[in-house]
Structures are given as structure tokens and as C-alpha cells.
Length: 200
Image 1 (spheres, rainbow, N blue to C red):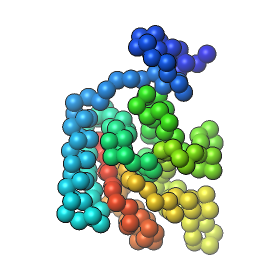
Image 2 (image 1 turned 60 degrees about the vertical axis):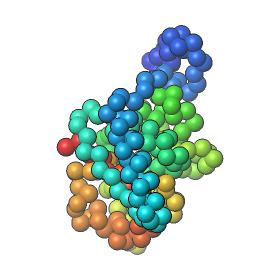
Image 3 (image 1 turned 30 degrees about the vertical axis):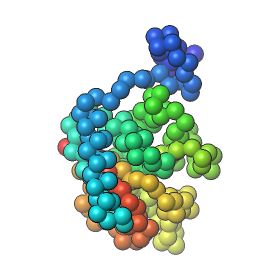
Image 4 (image 1 turned 135 degrees about the vertical axis):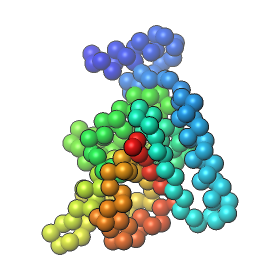
């Protein structure tokens, strides 16, 4: 058996609850995470109370080890979001986004999607269940030989996302090629919520 399977069994013995999908984590958000989620949710709601068509943004300038991924998923649950796009300037953080979603009991039923071979692909997801797509700016800004959107990314541009989270924001959101994403693909301007995540 795998380490994850052993951890799940130990959690089941400790809590007396039957778990599925090898979800062995059951810790609650820390106070600072809960406060960040509550403040963000309140901010979004206050903006929409003034203008239902507004596109609010919120920056989490979090310290190292804050737990941005876990807190982001808790915010998604609190807000009732079902389709989350995570764009990063540092693709190496993908494992953290995947592990937090797939190991914690709070996110049972959620699906993690990416372009990696061993991850779920868009074609195979259950659209009735919530899902998170993890992608890099480098890939999303890439173009095909005709100068258009890569065929594998067309669905990303046509999906009506509930929220977009920019991870490792300090690595390059201010650069011209990142801004180009919003100029070339106007559908991103329609997205109602943005969370910018940084630990610098």
C-alpha cells in the first residue's frame, strides 16, 4: 500500500470516520488563514453590493508557510465557487496545489486538472463536480504556428471561471507579457474575481 493509504487508515482509526479517495488530512484552517478567507469574502461581497458587475481583486501578501493553497481552497468553498483557474509564474508549485486538494477531507469531490500526463485532463472531468485547473502563464501565453491559442488551451479561454488565482504573483504579473494575456483574450476581463497570491 502507499503512504497516502496508510495515512488515511490512521486518520480513520483516530477519528472513527470512514474516508475515501485517500483523504487523510482533517486539520482546520489556522486563525490567520480563516481571517484571510473571511476578509476576502467580505471584501468581494462589499464590492458587489455597490456594483454587481465589478471585478474585485484581492492580494494575499502572505508570509512563507502561510498555506496559500489550502486557504484558497477554503475561500472557494466559502464562496460556493465550482470552477477555479490557478495561474502561476512558477510551475514547480503544482504539487502543493494538487496535494492540498486531493488529501484534505474538506475538498472531497473536487477534481484537480492540469496538462500533466498523470493528472486528470479536461476531457475526463465530471462537470457536475467542482474542479481546479492548474496552468502556467508561460503555457497559456504560448501560441500555435498561426499565432493563435494553442488547441489544448482553447477550453481554458472559453470557460466561465468563478475565480482566477494568480500564484507567485511577485514573479511577473507586472511584466508586459503577462498583461498581454488580458489584452489579447478579452474573455479574461469578464472574470468576476481575482486573487493574487504572493509570499514575498
